[in-house]
Length: 118
Image 1 (spheres, rainbow, N blue to C red):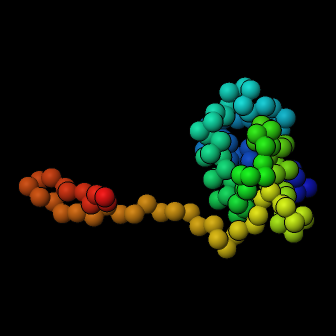
Image 2 (cartoon, rainbow, N blue to C red):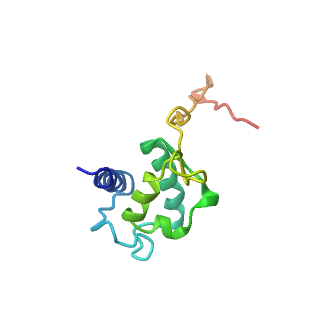
Image 3 (spheres, rainbow, N blue to C red):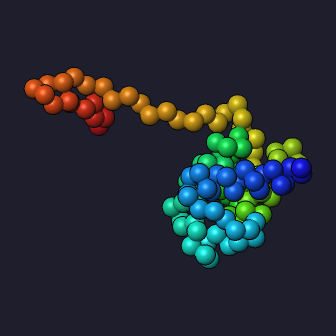
């Protein structure tokens, strides 16, 4: 199976798992069809960073790069070694999912006091 095909399958699974959307084809326009909105674009970039271990340079991408699974697969397939101005930079050693910080506090009078940062 080709790398592009594997990437398309991983992206499709990512959409299904995180956005609860099954994309009918790699060329479906995700924005025009309403499958993806502007807030989900931000989530999508974060998910790609986590799933593929690549940081996407916002300065180097266009909105059209995020419109279809096919274009996203091209974006993900861009490696840092391929060109000096690569759009996706491998950061497998740098990308670490953030874990929520535990809430600290003590029960006071049946209530729990939260640790609020100022």
